[in-house]
Length: 134
Image 1 (cartoon, rainbow, N blue to C red):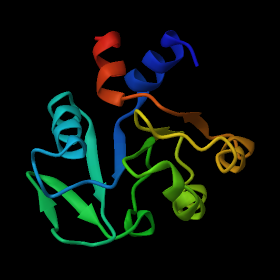
Image 2 (image 1 turned 45 degrees about the vertical axis):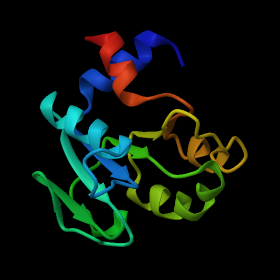
Image 3 (image 1 turned 180 degrees about the horizontal axis):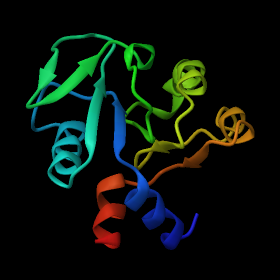
Image 4 (image 1 turned 60 degrees about the vertical axis):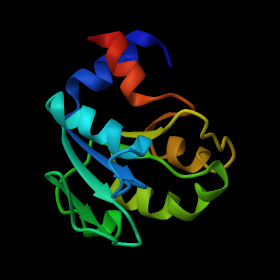
């Protein structure tokens, strides 16, 4: 995936679902979510623990299945070994892009996502990439 393609994705996307959004504002997932909101994206949180329902204006859901609007990017803040547990929901949600944050990679399981035609970005931080495009 080259920088031009990533910039095009970020420029044309509007709705981002963040799997693993934390209620703690100092955690990376929240800092990045807040950054994305500040930069004009609609951000929806997904946290199966449902420890909160709203994070500073970000609506939080138990699962992707609860989200009723089209999702452009699913941004994942889960460990690499946890990725198989979310793939079925990702395939059902059918986003344009599955984005695995910096340090997250699972080449084997994402083959299913790529075969469905969903662009997949692994091991890259959406905030850093957005900064390159700005």
